[in-house]
Amino acid sequence: MFWLVETPTQFEDFKFHIGREAFVVPLYRHPEIHPGIYNPLSLYIRNTDQNQDRGFLLNFSHSEALSIDIQEVKQLLSTLDKIYVVDKKAFNYFFFSSNVFDVGLRSNVDIKPTPTHQYFSQKYYTHPDLNTIIPIVKHFEYFDNLY
Image (spheres, one colour):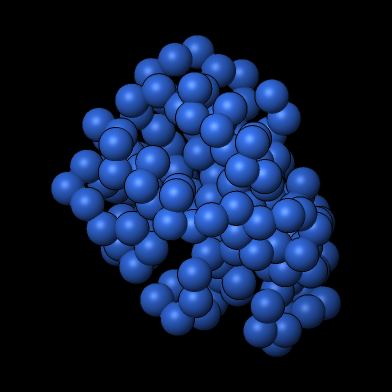
């Protein structure tokens, strides 16, 4: 199974890899734009109750990949026992449930962006869809390191 989930068939296969608990991070259009304004571009999900060597990126609207249905992903998230997120308040704009737990990484860990993220952020910071011009594989690399 590939790390990028972008077709309904891949999503059906992905369901068998998710487990009961997951670490989930949404990718928004711009890091400084309020998360309630837009749906996420994609969603990083990594199983925490099984030994997996990597996570998965489910694409909704990043231009470098095909899109899957956001409602099906929300339905899948509702079946999980626990969802661990970096920022519960921001995540609640996308998905609200009692099974979401904030791991509080923002205040405890110095999260370093990739060199690609630094380059695009410095050069195109005012671009309203900054994360759409950063290659999707670099977002995946960042989220895997974040985990």
